[in-house]
Length: 79
Image: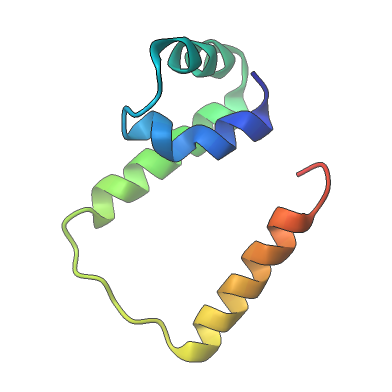
């Protein structure tokens, strides 16, 4: 298991939707990777905070900039 895989599986991990073997691999990785542990922790907290909140509509320019930034990040090699 590596950091990229943890990030790809973070939603499934937090939602309890992984098979036991993959979940165990992630948990083993988290024991030795402070960066991924922090990302998982922060993602979990963010989901808990916004779980019961009402969705808000982003202004179109903000949504466009956000989508562009995410596309650039996903295309970036080695990230």
